[in-house]
Image (cartoon, rainbow, N blue to C red; front, side, top):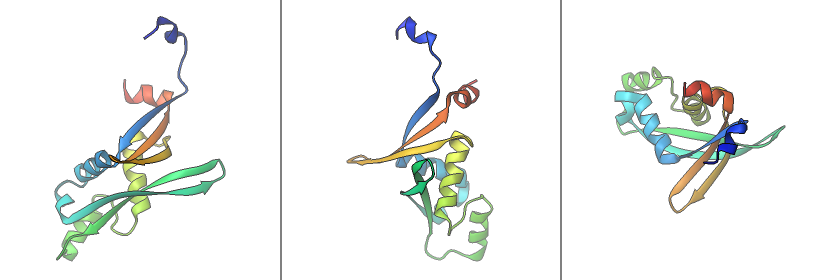
Length: 128
């Protein structure tokens, strides 16, 4: 890296995270109840005043024979069986903080990748 680069402060930092990594983080956050659901990652583009935004969705599909007690255990983790957008918001907010923006979703032969942007100041705080 050039010593000249040290003269500049970045404005934003971008992360590239794939759906498999998000799935692993979701399972980790679910803990013991992860075995009670199948986790699916998808997304939609939504129109916003500042342009199109990517809304990640994390769908938790019940496994066969889920009891009411199992459902309550899942809900106690903060996730919802019927709210994939809320689940996506929760995961990305937990990982990247409140100031993140998912700016792109890219699909290729390896699967789906999300590009997530956070302010540099937040990046410094996370890494200090």
